[in-house]
Image (cartoon, rainbow, N blue to C red; front, top):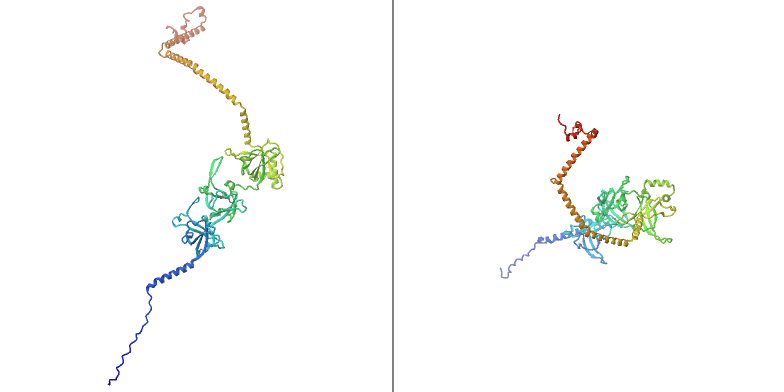
Length: 560
């Protein structure tokens, strides 16, 4: 082997081979991944549950907080207040409410919203639970098909919600009185409903009151039911004494309405919802039989009408047949006086069977002509209207229509309209005239002269009494003392052991014996009158007379 031989070459280096490794996820990344999934699910859930937004205006934001105050229906949360702002005119606040997707019915146009706060009123205490949990907004879904986004919140909770069963009715009255929303409705003194709303009538001449009667008591409202104002306390004084009536303590404070069907309506049927009724002032007027068509009359009085007011009763022979509707003054240029003109309405149907008989006697014609002929006959018989005192304490007057046989004849115009009833002076005015005449006579008495004479008489009487006290009384005192001494002497003289009484007793005994002797002698002489001439013989001695018991006592007969 030569030296030029190359050394063997070094082996080629081995190239490292990179093996692929499988990717592994660290457990640390699981936490943010799970959190992201949960957050995404919550976002999706909230997005799916997002409901409509509504804006409700309130007078104040008291108790409301954005993103905290809840909206509830039957104590179930249906939304949240998201924003509270002032209105442009700064008169109220606007609360933006984000409702749940299931609360879409609360966007109906007649839906209602109100703030539930603690309240103390005539109907009780409400909202006590909000003292700890805070105020919330109550809601009630309406029934309208139209939807709305802007609502006006109620200041007080509604007394009836749309979900309650029952019927609504409308009552017409002249004025609201003490009634208010929530005032109770009574049937036989049991509360069956309440007042839910009221407003002025369309013509402005009355008030329309909307009431709600809860089921099943709404079936007791019949088409002929009578409603009356049961507010306050009804006090009446009659032949049976003082009577006080009221429905309940609540009706005294916040007013109330009662209803009942009259006894003369046996065929009445249950009333339909939203039926209209008249609200009467009291129970007696409500349950009274129908009055029929009223007739207007006029009366002219030549006297003061102070105390006669509108709605004062008009009586006919003690029966209330109408009421006064106006009291005005007129001027008579012939006499220069101011007579009072009273307008009244009367209801002839209140006379009952008597009115039917009068209609038959009046003959044909319309009802106005019949009434005129009937009143004409009554005026010919002495029918007169008179103002009388109904209450001496208050001075209230009423109009009484009665027959006066001594009333002068007056021409009656049957064709005049309105019908005019002649009048006579009131009994109270006659009493005033008599009192005035008595006062006038009393004023003519010379009181000053009588007082002067009486004063002089009192002076003379005073002098006489002074003389009696100074002269006569001392003498009378001495005389009485002397009489007392004399009576004492007489008492001592006539005592049981006094000599005078013993002597008097002996004297009386002597007088008694003498009387017996005289009686014996008289008896003897009546039988022997000859003894006055011949004298007394031995046989005819008075002492021997056996027929006289007195002779035996004085001179007993000698023994044989």
